[in-house]
Image (cartoon, rainbow over all chains, first blue to last red; front, side):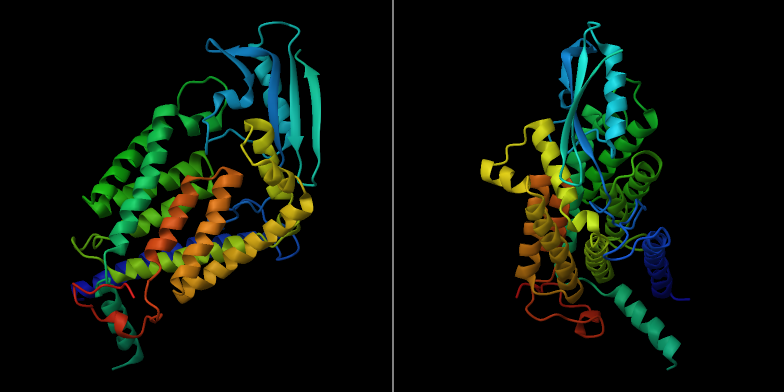
Length: 132
Length: 277
């Protein structure tokens, strides 16, 4: 086989691998119930489900601020990068769990944490809990 | 000549054809540069590490090692040295990062693009080339990503505007995102978010068509800037947005006439030829 043909075989094998990886991802979406204008997709690598799955997001505050590595932290965002990078969860319950974990760093027993959660149905709810 | 031999001959010609201009190399440098900045920030500030666990913990050395590989590879892709080796290393590192540590769509996408731009200098067989097939494959890849993501957004959660509502209002609540007041008010309205979400999905599918058809250039770039400019400003997604705009602006041919794979583009064009129309 001529060198040019080896290059052709290599090129086709690479492209075929990319087609298989991405084609299989779409098949998995379908198998997991996705239907256009019907069932929402789930997370499947290489299916390109950006922004397509349902999420909740919450902001967390502690009052008074907790202390982590010598720094006072009153908001979850105090320990994340200003843009792009963020530590997020998909469900409000996960935020509540994270806020409770943050209570381990409280400086007083009277610390409370506050959650403002934004939901996909257009609701924003706010709740406060005492750290135990 | 049998159909099989003809097909092999055509494929060999396509693989051997040179791209018309330097846009592929420019895209490689810009794409690698955008993600080099991302990875440098990530390595220095441990941002993905923090995304995995917000609370104090020992740094994961495997993730740090991947980030070192990504920074080194990104640097070499920008400079244009040992492109295949470092491109494939970046693809493997990014895929590992996504599959084993942090399943971010941006990372999956990067792994595919790195695997393709690893061949932008000729791949393992040659150096100093500008293979047309890599340019073609990248155009199809971008077109596919826009089509798949646009179609997957055709679901109630996205079209209702709920997703945009969550993302924008979260930025307001958590980061005091500096939306102008009228914009913030508008984004607080689920029906308005629904319209924006529907338009967004439609524009992505339209841009997919432009990328498949390879024209018109201005419409493609306008759509990319509109989609990803909004994506950056209202959803805080900057690096992926920048690399997608760069991809559309640099890979989409600037000719007025789209050329198919079976026409004159299979023949190596003159080296000095420009694709600017």
